[in-house]
Length: 70
Image 1 (tube, rainbow, N blue to C red):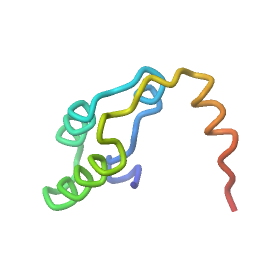
Image 2 (cartoon, rainbow, N blue to C red; image 1 turned 180 degrees about the vertical axis):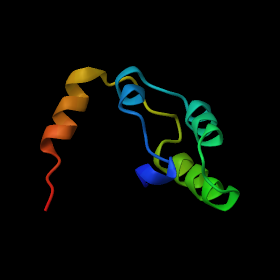
Image 3 (cartoon, rainbow, N blue to C red; image 1 turned 90 degrees about the vertical axis):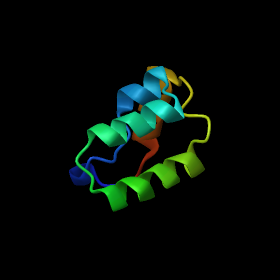
Image 4 (tube, rainbow, N blue to C red; image 1 turned 30 degrees about the vertical axis):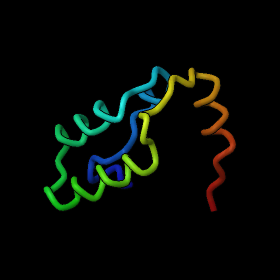
């Protein structure tokens, strides 16, 4: 996923949770071309078939802190 394309997951959606339909709606509101939108929707359905459950701020902080960059 690329931030410049508009197909990223909002951290607020990780904290408060979102349905798969909500994720798809967000893609529709973005600036992806139709082909990329279809690819992104397929990826979301594969990775998050039930949406993203509510994880809270602590889980988001842990994930961001444990992410290492090279």
